[in-house]
Length: 372
Image (cartoon, rainbow, N blue to C red):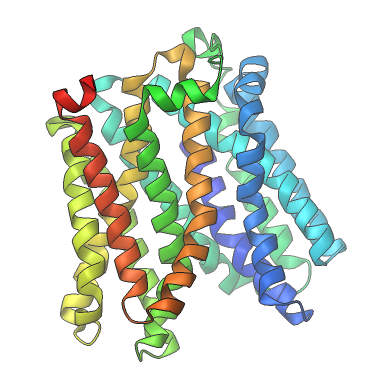
Protein backbone atom coordinates (compact mmCIF):
# COMPACT_ATOMS: atom_id res chain seq x y z
CA UNK A 1 0.00 0.00 0.00
CA UNK A 2 2.94 2.37 0.62
CA UNK A 3 4.33 1.53 -2.82
CA UNK A 4 1.10 2.64 -4.53
CA UNK A 5 1.26 5.91 -2.56
CA UNK A 6 4.80 6.39 -3.82
CA UNK A 7 3.55 5.88 -7.37
CA UNK A 8 0.75 8.43 -7.04
CA UNK A 9 3.15 10.95 -5.48
CA UNK A 10 5.66 10.34 -8.28
CA UNK A 11 3.09 11.15 -10.96
CA UNK A 12 1.93 14.24 -9.05
CA UNK A 13 5.52 15.49 -9.01
CA UNK A 14 6.53 14.21 -12.47
CA UNK A 15 3.66 15.06 -14.79
CA UNK A 16 2.93 18.78 -14.16
CA UNK A 17 6.43 20.10 -15.02
CA UNK A 18 6.68 17.68 -17.96
CA UNK A 19 3.31 18.86 -19.30
CA UNK A 20 4.16 22.52 -18.72
CA UNK A 21 7.49 22.37 -20.54
CA UNK A 22 6.16 20.27 -23.42
CA UNK A 23 3.13 22.47 -24.09
CA UNK A 24 5.19 25.62 -23.66
CA UNK A 25 7.51 24.47 -26.47
CA UNK A 26 4.44 23.95 -28.63
CA UNK A 27 3.41 27.58 -28.07
CA UNK A 28 0.42 27.16 -25.75
CA UNK A 29 -0.49 29.87 -23.21
CA UNK A 30 0.09 29.65 -19.48
CA UNK A 31 -3.67 29.55 -18.94
CA UNK A 32 -4.02 26.53 -21.23
CA UNK A 33 -1.13 24.78 -19.50
CA UNK A 34 -2.65 25.49 -16.10
CA UNK A 35 -5.99 24.10 -17.25
CA UNK A 36 -4.38 20.84 -18.37
CA UNK A 37 -2.55 20.54 -15.06
CA UNK A 38 -5.60 21.27 -12.90
CA UNK A 39 -8.05 19.00 -14.72
CA UNK A 40 -6.86 15.87 -12.90
CA UNK A 41 -7.86 17.36 -9.54
CA UNK A 42 -11.21 18.38 -10.98
CA UNK A 43 -11.64 14.78 -12.16
CA UNK A 44 -11.18 13.48 -8.61
CA UNK A 45 -13.79 15.94 -7.33
CA UNK A 46 -16.34 14.99 -10.01
CA UNK A 47 -15.73 11.24 -9.72
CA UNK A 48 -15.73 11.29 -5.91
CA UNK A 49 -19.38 10.25 -5.42
CA UNK A 50 -18.74 7.10 -7.49
CA UNK A 51 -15.54 5.91 -5.79
CA UNK A 52 -17.12 4.25 -2.71
CA UNK A 53 -19.36 2.08 -4.88
CA UNK A 54 -16.42 1.07 -7.09
CA UNK A 55 -14.28 0.22 -4.05
CA UNK A 56 -17.05 -1.90 -2.56
CA UNK A 57 -17.54 -3.72 -5.86
CA UNK A 58 -13.89 -4.34 -6.84
CA UNK A 59 -12.09 -4.42 -3.50
CA UNK A 60 -9.06 -2.42 -2.44
CA UNK A 61 -6.29 -4.32 -4.21
CA UNK A 62 -8.06 -4.47 -7.58
CA UNK A 63 -8.82 -0.76 -7.42
CA UNK A 64 -5.16 0.07 -6.78
CA UNK A 65 -3.78 -2.25 -9.46
CA UNK A 66 -6.29 -1.32 -12.15
CA UNK A 67 -5.95 2.40 -11.43
CA UNK A 68 -2.15 2.36 -11.70
CA UNK A 69 -2.16 0.23 -14.86
CA UNK A 70 -4.72 2.55 -16.46
CA UNK A 71 -2.77 5.70 -15.52
CA UNK A 72 0.48 4.18 -16.81
CA UNK A 73 -1.16 3.35 -20.15
CA UNK A 74 -2.49 6.89 -20.53
CA UNK A 75 0.98 8.29 -19.82
CA UNK A 76 2.32 6.24 -22.75
CA UNK A 77 -0.40 7.58 -25.05
CA UNK A 78 0.14 11.27 -24.27
CA UNK A 79 3.21 11.92 -26.49
CA UNK A 80 1.44 10.34 -29.45
CA UNK A 81 -1.17 13.15 -29.55
CA UNK A 82 0.36 16.28 -27.99
CA UNK A 83 -2.04 19.17 -27.60
CA UNK A 84 -4.24 20.89 -25.04
CA UNK A 85 -7.61 19.38 -26.04
CA UNK A 86 -6.42 15.76 -26.15
CA UNK A 87 -4.24 16.10 -23.08
CA UNK A 88 -7.08 17.61 -21.05
CA UNK A 89 -9.20 14.57 -21.87
CA UNK A 90 -6.36 12.16 -21.07
CA UNK A 91 -5.47 13.96 -17.84
CA UNK A 92 -9.11 13.85 -16.78
CA UNK A 93 -9.27 10.08 -17.32
CA UNK A 94 -5.91 9.58 -15.58
CA UNK A 95 -7.12 11.74 -12.69
CA UNK A 96 -10.17 9.49 -12.27
CA UNK A 97 -7.91 6.43 -12.15
CA UNK A 98 -5.30 7.89 -9.80
CA UNK A 99 -8.02 9.24 -7.52
CA UNK A 100 -9.27 5.68 -7.09
CA UNK A 101 -5.74 4.50 -6.24
CA UNK A 102 -5.28 7.41 -3.84
CA UNK A 103 -8.48 6.77 -1.88
CA UNK A 104 -8.20 2.97 -1.87
CA UNK A 105 -4.62 3.19 -0.53
CA UNK A 106 -5.64 5.45 2.34
CA UNK A 107 -8.61 3.25 3.25
CA UNK A 108 -6.31 0.22 3.25
CA UNK A 109 -3.82 1.92 5.57
CA UNK A 110 -6.52 3.17 7.92
CA UNK A 111 -8.14 -0.26 8.16
CA UNK A 112 -4.82 -2.09 8.59
CA UNK A 113 -3.34 0.20 11.24
CA UNK A 114 -4.47 0.02 14.85
CA UNK A 115 -5.52 3.03 16.88
CA UNK A 116 -2.26 3.14 18.82
CA UNK A 117 -0.04 3.27 15.73
CA UNK A 118 -2.32 5.08 13.26
CA UNK A 119 -0.49 8.40 13.54
CA UNK A 120 2.89 6.79 12.85
CA UNK A 121 1.49 4.82 9.90
CA UNK A 122 -0.01 7.95 8.37
CA UNK A 123 3.24 9.79 9.05
CA UNK A 124 5.08 7.14 7.03
CA UNK A 125 2.42 7.45 4.35
CA UNK A 126 2.92 11.22 4.20
CA UNK A 127 6.67 10.75 3.97
CA UNK A 128 6.42 8.18 1.16
CA UNK A 129 3.93 10.32 -0.78
CA UNK A 130 6.16 13.39 -0.43
CA UNK A 131 9.23 11.42 -1.51
CA UNK A 132 7.31 10.50 -4.66
CA UNK A 133 6.49 14.16 -5.34
CA UNK A 134 10.10 15.22 -4.80
CA UNK A 135 11.37 12.34 -6.96
CA UNK A 136 9.23 13.46 -9.91
CA UNK A 137 11.26 16.53 -10.93
CA UNK A 138 14.49 14.68 -10.11
CA UNK A 139 13.49 11.94 -12.54
CA UNK A 140 13.00 14.55 -15.26
CA UNK A 141 16.62 15.60 -14.80
CA UNK A 142 17.65 12.14 -16.04
CA UNK A 143 15.02 11.60 -18.73
CA UNK A 144 14.81 15.11 -20.17
CA UNK A 145 11.46 16.52 -21.26
CA UNK A 146 11.48 15.85 -25.01
CA UNK A 147 10.24 12.91 -27.03
CA UNK A 148 8.81 9.63 -25.83
CA UNK A 149 11.50 8.82 -23.24
CA UNK A 150 10.20 10.75 -20.19
CA UNK A 151 6.66 9.43 -20.69
CA UNK A 152 7.87 5.84 -21.10
CA UNK A 153 10.16 6.02 -18.05
CA UNK A 154 7.40 7.61 -15.96
CA UNK A 155 4.96 4.91 -17.01
CA UNK A 156 7.52 2.20 -16.20
CA UNK A 157 8.23 3.65 -12.75
CA UNK A 158 4.51 3.75 -12.04
CA UNK A 159 4.15 0.07 -12.95
CA UNK A 160 7.18 -0.88 -10.82
CA UNK A 161 5.31 0.35 -7.72
CA UNK A 162 2.90 -2.57 -8.25
CA UNK A 163 5.59 -5.20 -7.58
CA UNK A 164 5.16 -5.27 -3.78
CA UNK A 165 1.40 -5.61 -4.27
CA UNK A 166 1.94 -8.64 -6.49
CA UNK A 167 3.27 -10.50 -3.45
CA UNK A 168 0.15 -9.80 -1.41
CA UNK A 169 -3.04 -11.79 -1.54
CA UNK A 170 -6.35 -10.02 -1.93
CA UNK A 171 -7.31 -8.05 1.18
CA UNK A 172 -9.56 -10.13 3.41
CA UNK A 173 -11.76 -9.51 6.40
CA UNK A 174 -13.69 -6.38 7.29
CA UNK A 175 -11.90 -4.31 4.69
CA UNK A 176 -13.90 -6.14 2.02
CA UNK A 177 -17.24 -5.38 3.66
CA UNK A 178 -17.38 -1.62 3.17
CA UNK A 179 -20.75 -0.06 2.51
CA UNK A 180 -21.13 3.55 1.36
CA UNK A 181 -22.89 6.14 3.49
CA UNK A 182 -26.23 7.35 2.20
CA UNK A 183 -24.78 10.70 1.24
CA UNK A 184 -21.46 12.51 1.32
CA UNK A 185 -23.16 15.43 3.08
CA UNK A 186 -23.66 13.15 6.09
CA UNK A 187 -19.92 12.57 6.21
CA UNK A 188 -19.27 16.31 6.23
CA UNK A 189 -21.64 16.83 9.15
CA UNK A 190 -20.13 13.91 11.06
CA UNK A 191 -16.55 15.26 11.04
CA UNK A 192 -16.39 18.93 9.97
CA UNK A 193 -12.96 19.55 11.55
CA UNK A 194 -11.42 16.64 9.62
CA UNK A 195 -12.83 18.02 6.37
CA UNK A 196 -11.61 21.51 7.30
CA UNK A 197 -8.12 20.01 7.65
CA UNK A 198 -8.43 18.61 4.11
CA UNK A 199 -9.57 21.96 2.67
CA UNK A 200 -6.83 23.97 4.38
CA UNK A 201 -4.18 21.39 3.46
CA UNK A 202 -5.15 21.41 -0.22
CA UNK A 203 -5.40 25.20 -0.42
CA UNK A 204 -2.15 26.00 1.37
CA UNK A 205 -0.02 23.22 -0.15
CA UNK A 206 -1.06 24.03 -3.72
CA UNK A 207 -0.58 27.77 -3.18
CA UNK A 208 2.86 27.18 -1.64
CA UNK A 209 4.13 24.82 -4.35
CA UNK A 210 2.80 27.00 -7.17
CA UNK A 211 3.44 30.53 -5.88
CA UNK A 212 6.33 30.33 -3.39
CA UNK A 213 8.98 30.55 -6.17
CA UNK A 214 7.11 33.50 -7.70
CA UNK A 215 6.97 35.17 -4.29
CA UNK A 216 10.73 34.71 -3.99
CA UNK A 217 11.33 36.27 -7.42
CA UNK A 218 9.11 39.25 -6.59
CA UNK A 219 11.05 39.68 -3.33
CA UNK A 220 14.37 39.99 -5.18
CA UNK A 221 15.72 36.42 -5.13
CA UNK A 222 17.25 34.91 -8.26
CA UNK A 223 15.59 31.92 -9.93
CA UNK A 224 17.81 29.32 -8.21
CA UNK A 225 17.16 30.76 -4.73
CA UNK A 226 13.43 31.05 -5.46
CA UNK A 227 13.22 27.37 -6.44
CA UNK A 228 15.23 26.47 -3.36
CA UNK A 229 12.40 27.84 -1.22
CA UNK A 230 10.14 25.01 -2.43
CA UNK A 231 12.94 22.43 -2.16
CA UNK A 232 13.60 23.16 1.53
CA UNK A 233 9.85 23.35 2.17
CA UNK A 234 9.41 19.85 0.71
CA UNK A 235 12.42 18.45 2.61
CA UNK A 236 10.71 19.47 5.84
CA UNK A 237 7.56 17.83 4.52
CA UNK A 238 9.40 14.55 4.01
CA UNK A 239 11.44 14.59 7.22
CA UNK A 240 8.87 15.56 9.85
CA UNK A 241 5.83 13.39 9.08
CA UNK A 242 6.93 10.33 11.06
CA UNK A 243 7.99 12.30 14.19
CA UNK A 244 4.71 14.24 14.07
CA UNK A 245 2.78 10.98 13.68
CA UNK A 246 4.53 9.41 16.69
CA UNK A 247 3.82 12.50 18.80
CA UNK A 248 0.19 12.46 17.65
CA UNK A 249 -0.16 8.85 18.80
CA UNK A 250 1.19 9.82 22.20
CA UNK A 251 -0.39 13.22 22.88
CA UNK A 252 -3.52 13.17 20.71
CA UNK A 253 -4.13 14.09 17.10
CA UNK A 254 -6.13 17.27 17.67
CA UNK A 255 -3.54 18.61 20.10
CA UNK A 256 -0.70 18.00 17.63
CA UNK A 257 -2.75 19.48 14.79
CA UNK A 258 -3.28 22.56 16.93
CA UNK A 259 0.49 22.91 17.40
CA UNK A 260 1.01 22.44 13.65
CA UNK A 261 -1.71 24.99 12.85
CA UNK A 262 -0.12 27.56 15.17
CA UNK A 263 3.29 26.97 13.57
CA UNK A 264 1.82 27.23 10.06
CA UNK A 265 0.07 30.44 11.07
CA UNK A 266 3.27 32.09 12.32
CA UNK A 267 5.62 30.74 9.61
CA UNK A 268 4.30 32.70 6.59
CA UNK A 269 4.29 35.98 8.57
CA UNK A 270 8.03 35.57 9.27
CA UNK A 271 8.91 34.70 5.68
CA UNK A 272 9.51 38.23 4.36
CA UNK A 273 11.78 39.18 7.26
CA UNK A 274 13.88 36.00 6.92
CA UNK A 275 14.41 36.06 3.15
CA UNK A 276 17.77 37.81 3.41
CA UNK A 277 19.03 35.58 6.24
CA UNK A 278 19.49 31.95 5.11
CA UNK A 279 20.32 30.76 8.64
CA UNK A 280 16.79 31.78 9.64
CA UNK A 281 15.03 31.17 6.32
CA UNK A 282 15.92 27.49 5.81
CA UNK A 283 14.91 26.29 9.32
CA UNK A 284 11.69 28.31 9.01
CA UNK A 285 10.77 26.67 5.70
CA UNK A 286 11.80 23.22 6.97
CA UNK A 287 9.56 23.36 10.07
CA UNK A 288 6.73 25.13 8.26
CA UNK A 289 6.72 22.56 5.43
CA UNK A 290 6.65 19.62 7.85
CA UNK A 291 3.92 20.96 10.11
CA UNK A 292 1.76 22.04 7.19
CA UNK A 293 1.50 18.60 5.60
CA UNK A 294 0.46 17.17 8.96
CA UNK A 295 -2.96 18.69 8.24
CA UNK A 296 -3.37 16.05 5.56
CA UNK A 297 -1.56 13.02 7.00
CA UNK A 298 -3.05 13.33 10.49
CA UNK A 299 -6.41 14.32 9.03
CA UNK A 300 -6.48 10.93 7.30
CA UNK A 301 -5.58 9.29 10.61
CA UNK A 302 -8.49 11.11 12.27
CA UNK A 303 -10.82 9.59 9.67
CA UNK A 304 -9.99 6.17 11.08
CA UNK A 305 -10.98 7.36 14.55
CA UNK A 306 -14.15 9.23 13.59
CA UNK A 307 -15.72 6.66 11.26
CA UNK A 308 -16.57 2.99 11.46
CA UNK A 309 -14.72 0.74 9.04
CA UNK A 310 -17.74 0.23 6.81
CA UNK A 311 -18.11 4.01 6.34
CA UNK A 312 -14.47 4.71 5.47
CA UNK A 313 -14.96 4.69 1.67
CA UNK A 314 -17.40 7.59 1.76
CA UNK A 315 -15.44 9.43 4.45
CA UNK A 316 -12.08 9.06 2.73
CA UNK A 317 -13.61 9.95 -0.64
CA UNK A 318 -15.03 13.23 0.67
CA UNK A 319 -11.74 13.99 2.41
CA UNK A 320 -9.83 13.67 -0.87
CA UNK A 321 -12.51 15.61 -2.79
CA UNK A 322 -12.30 18.51 -0.33
CA UNK A 323 -8.48 18.40 -0.47
CA UNK A 324 -8.58 18.58 -4.28
CA UNK A 325 -11.08 21.44 -4.11
CA UNK A 326 -8.62 23.32 -1.94
CA UNK A 327 -5.90 22.45 -4.45
CA UNK A 328 -7.91 24.03 -7.26
CA UNK A 329 -8.77 27.15 -5.24
CA UNK A 330 -5.36 27.78 -3.63
CA UNK A 331 -3.25 28.96 -6.61
CA UNK A 332 -6.06 31.16 -7.96
CA UNK A 333 -6.82 32.89 -4.66
CA UNK A 334 -3.11 33.11 -3.87
CA UNK A 335 -2.41 34.70 -7.25
CA UNK A 336 -5.13 37.30 -6.67
CA UNK A 337 -3.72 38.02 -3.19
CA UNK A 338 -0.25 38.58 -4.69
CA UNK A 339 -1.66 40.93 -7.33
CA UNK A 340 -3.60 42.97 -4.77
CA UNK A 341 -0.86 43.02 -2.10
CA UNK A 342 2.44 41.99 -3.74
CA UNK A 343 4.71 41.63 -0.70
CA UNK A 344 2.18 40.53 1.90
CA UNK A 345 -0.79 39.01 0.10
CA UNK A 346 0.44 35.41 -0.12
CA UNK A 347 1.82 35.18 3.45
CA UNK A 348 -1.37 36.69 4.88
CA UNK A 349 -3.53 34.22 2.92
CA UNK A 350 -1.46 31.23 4.05
CA UNK A 351 -1.43 32.42 7.66
CA UNK A 352 -5.18 33.08 7.62
CA UNK A 353 -5.90 29.57 6.33
CA UNK A 354 -3.85 28.03 9.16
CA UNK A 355 -5.60 30.32 11.65
CA UNK A 356 -8.94 29.04 10.35
CA UNK A 357 -7.74 25.48 11.05
CA UNK A 358 -6.66 26.46 14.55
CA UNK A 359 -10.03 28.10 15.20
CA UNK A 360 -11.87 24.99 14.01
CA UNK A 361 -9.84 22.78 16.33
CA UNK A 362 -10.46 25.07 19.31
CA UNK A 363 -14.19 25.19 18.56
CA UNK A 364 -14.42 21.40 18.28
CA UNK A 365 -12.70 21.05 21.66
CA UNK A 366 -15.24 23.33 23.36
CA UNK A 367 -18.09 21.18 24.80
CA UNK A 368 -20.48 24.15 24.96
CA UNK A 369 -19.85 24.97 21.29
CA UNK A 370 -20.41 21.35 20.27
CA UNK A 371 -23.77 21.26 22.11
CA UNK A 372 -24.96 24.32 20.22
